[in-house]
Amino acid sequence: MADLIGETRLDAWLEERAWSRRGEALEREWSFGDFAGALAFVNAVGGLAESQGHHPDITLHDYNQVRLRLWTHSAGGVTENDLELAERVDELQ
Image 1 (cartoon, rainbow, N blue to C red):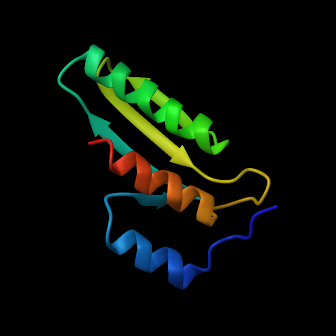
Image 2: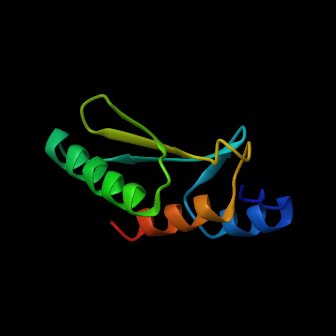
Image 3: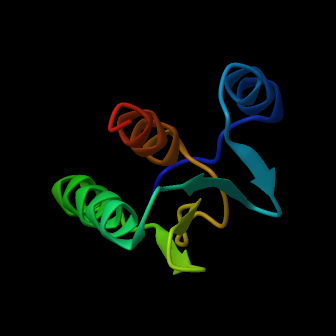
């Protein structure tokens, strides 16, 4: 099982990014011009997640909005795996 990120490390990481903390998870939302763009992003995130064996909660809503929640269920919060996936997702844009 992966270790949880310490509060100091997580706070410093969050200061540099558009992600926020919601409960025990990292969360970020994107807005796309249309449904096709949102769906393409979801599929790209799915490919990244699958390659890492780490699977976020993905919500596609209001036809062009995508929300991701990242946390390591087995650890009960945010781990380095979550930060790594979030950084890779950010590179998709």
